[in-house]
Length: 274
Image 1 (cartoon, rainbow, N blue to C red):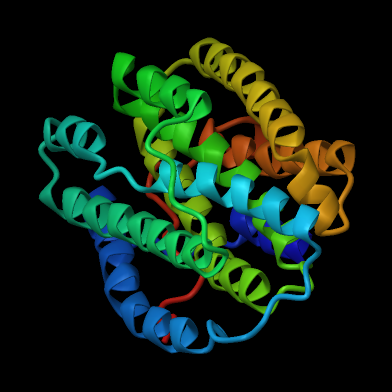
Image 2: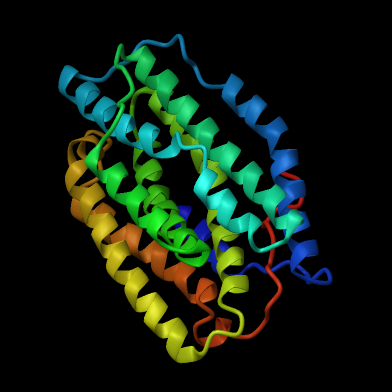
C-alpha cells in the first residue's frame, strides 16, 4: 500500500491553476483543512492502553522515537527565513503550516515517550549533523534534505505501523497520513526551484542528493536497527525500500526524464483531507 502511495506521489498531477503562487495556495488550503483530520485521528490513538512489548523492544522503540522527536521539534526559523527572501507570501504561508505539522509529529512522539516513562533528548549527533547541513546551504538544498528525510521516514513509520503496541501503531498511522503529502510538497518546491536549471545542473544535484540519501538510509538502518527489528522489519530491507521511495520522488523533484516538462507545482493529491 505504501508503494502505491509513493507512486501516486510521482504520477498523480492536479490541474494547473495559473502560476506558482496559486499552486502553493492549494497547499495552504490543504494544510488548513488538515487540522480537522489531525484532531480526529489524534483522538483515536489509545493512549491509555497497555503495551505488549518486551522490555528490550520497549527500550529499542523508545530510543528510536527519542531521535525522531528531536529531529521534528525545530521551529524551522532558518528554512522560513530563506523562503521569505524569495518574496512569495503565498508560499511562505504554506511552508509555515508545513513546519507546524512537523512540530505536531514531535508532540505525538513526546507523548508516546512519556507513556513509556522516557524523557526526550536534548541533543543527538545525527540531528546536529542534519541541522548543520541545512544551515550551511540555500533554500533549494535545504528542501532537498527535507525530501530525503521524508522519504526515509516514510518507510520508518511504515515499519512502526506494524508494531504490536497500539500506541506506537496509532502514532505511526497518524504520521503516515501526513508523510505522503509532505513528500509531494517537497517535490513541488524543488520543481519550482529547479526551473531554468540546465539538465547537467539537475543531474549534478540529484547525484549529490543520492549520496546523502544513501547515507541517511544507512544511518537510520544502523542507528534504529533494534526498533526496526522490534517491528518485524530487517534493517537491510528497510534500507532498500527507503531508497526506492527516494528514487520515485527524485524524478519529478529534479525534473528528470519524462518529468522534465512543466513548471507549475502539482499540489496535494487530495483537495480536502477532512
